[in-house]
Image (cartoon, rainbow, N blue to C red):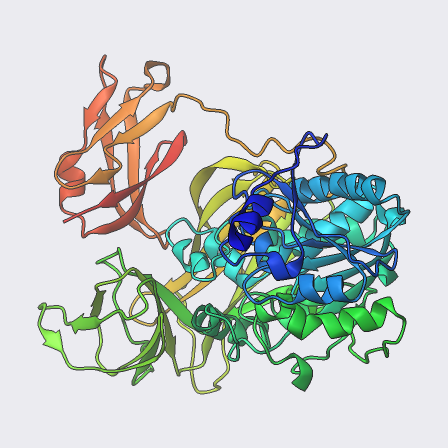
Length: 600
């Protein structure tokens, strides 16, 4: 009878008067079943039960992902029980999963109005885990709710973005982001979007009150109590050489909101836990409570310019599982290479073949699920697996590539340098720098049609430049490669933004959808084995079409002129059949660049 009563209470939804939210009344913590399943589609406000010793203070918890919000009151998270027992009214707000900071911030702002009216309080406390902390600052400053917030606590929030989100914006690598379970909403969590759009806008916002923020940033990606610890161990290992100490998703340096109070210093012994643990009450509530009750001590953590991530370096190149043309090639002055492989299947197996397709012996070491290290001493090898993978091929000859941005009065220039840290290594003269550029979003974070193009950098005084003056406003992902045939190759995944970041971003409803348009140029099918056809709008036809095929590093592998006539469909099968399996780009004049996959 007790179980039946509990289940009835759990599924008795109170439909109130919110246009955007489903509102649900929770039972007391002791009656909350671990089998509870709330809404995973609609934004929801879960109201905690009124504590018998109510102290007049209301805390709104926000994760930032609609189907993970329940993790703040279920699954052995003590937040609900702790706040209830100590007299705080808890409210758990789920915004959206993949809409990003501005949409989630607007929804959170709406929920603040709903909650303050419901409990007749002038202010609330906000506790935001991960992207929930970013939604908090958008709600407070961009959407004007700062006067209704006493303090905002940010738990593992990547205010400066995370390199994992940068990786996710590459269409052929976005599976890597899913290893964390946080596979959407990454567009507004990239290092470049946060650096170039979010931070300048909110840190200089007239409503900004940074002293209201208290930051809890963790450093222990390698130590977690959750089921996801293995995934954070892998992703944290990827972040470590690029962004330093991290919790598996958020680098410690990224959690430092300018002007905020920082509870933990980097590698603080009190914060050696992963990204999910920092969102659990048993880890974070004692610190939150101490700040609410004004008993906290100030931290000595200092925000440095390193958070700007203005320069990215690489001593590796990246190969991808779908591309048989991607080979492990030793640099001219390297005797060996180490492949650090991130793979989709946790227990992937690997084989290596030489140019004659003979199997080669190799040493591998699986450090943990989803990550394997492979030592290579031979040249021109193909790596195969029973899983999707991305391999970061690192070598020891000291050659590095760096990527920076140079802002002029009117536009942005991308700057690349190639250099060696070893004095006895001389750089070749025939270095080519190129990239695959994908427009992934508008400045407000809304989706675009992922327009792709191949770009080439011009050399000037031993540096390489690309001028973005002809690009339209928006957010761009960049897969950057430098190469000297027979000497070396290097890769960087990054991106940048174009446009005026001072406009009222996110004030209007984020459309976040793509208006369907009939493609003027298409390749069919998109996954090609033997036959392929180019479809082109008759209005775009010229006497001849210049067609170019590039691999995903931007290297030109084939080009030809296609004679045209009265038809709008052209058989290009013979030009594609000879390609090795992998991902390619087909450029049609200057009309469009189309991505396709060549299969066996």
